[in-house]
Image (cartoon, rainbow, N blue to C red; front, top):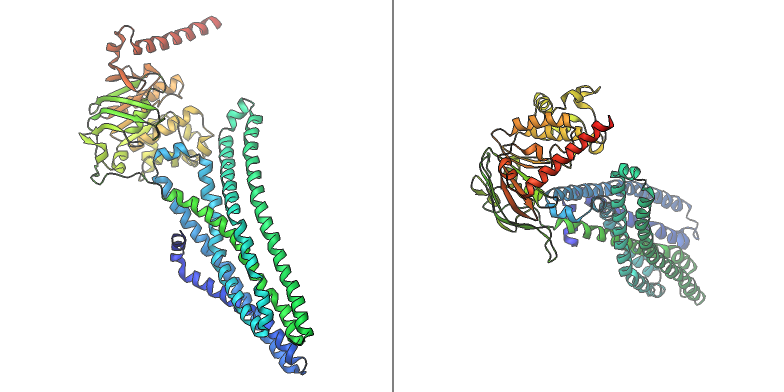
Length: 586
């Protein structure tokens, strides 16, 4: 895993080498102070060499100026290396998310995914910046200080060095617990992000049902988990820091007592003893930095593990035999198609042995009870999911032998659950075609019956629609999404409750436009309002994953006891009932 992590340094190797060189330079310059201190105590001050005292003082000042410049390079360029690596990883992660199948998003909440893109990558960035330079500075500082202390007095140095293993034992003793608590904290933070994302997105529903207390309770559950997880993480961190500081304080006690005994017995001079006491911090400080680095290392490794969990997931892939087809407008054929969501034994079968044909240029409507499998059929055609058995073909070509890019370019989809992007009307309509001109966008808006509304706004097509179209009504959102498909102008249409959010007047206008758009195109319509699909070439009644009835409107209405007839009569009766009620009220 470390090899994989260091591969992200490759594009920034010159800057990284500069950063490491400056870090090493800082370590070298850091040891000059105790060296000059010892020289002054043992020679320059006792022998009253005033000129040399000034010279070495100037040398030390110059060294600190160089150290300042190097410290600037370490902080600036080191952070930029970490930031650039973070940006590369975020780009790679985002690209990966765009390539993952729908099933991944079915099982992972948006807030948890966002946590990996933000907080996890931030921890990785900190490790990428501080990790190598801290190791270089600390390791070389320890080596330089060990050599220097040994030259002052080897026996006293060996006594001090013998205390070092206790720091390593403390670090490794609590490391595993710290990693576990760090992972728990990340998971709980991801849950908080998910809860906040859900609550903010649904704030209007929350207020409509006066359920602010319930949302707060849900949030507090995750918040408490986060506090508990952080409690464990900070416990191990505090324990490690307290024990580490205690051991380094013991260093000073041992140094003071041992040095005092050595001085009493004439085994060390007063100047060397003073220099040794002054210099002991240059040995203990980098050890403390390494211990602190282990905490950062644990957090960064945990974040990197979560990062590569997603990076290593299998992406949507075409068969090797798949080809690109510019135009796909022939017969759509489902043959003995079976499908179930999930891959375990408890997964529920949604489609069972479904077979039907949509001839070129014809319209087939899918109706039936909710949850029967209508939308799933629509998801299988553009390969959002893959059939477990059976075949789906267009122009007689198995869709598994058609590249996804080619397949989806030829299919236009308008769904009941409209998703709009933050931005302007123009941005959202032009999303349907990369090279669209303003004239084409205007034409599509007119066909979707949203042009007049857009032009009534002060900024016209540059008007912002808000997050997910929050500034628009349900009907306006639906018409905007329909305009996107008008602009795309695909040979195959999937209309999944495309007019469900429209009022009667607007629905009639849109239905007329959709009827015009469907001419010469192969169309699949999912509808609950059966009045909108009476003129379909064929109607399929889907129930419990099977096609139970098939035929045009007239044929299905003649079938006594048929599901379609019952559904149609039920809707017609509901309409008449509402009409009679409104007349009575008036």
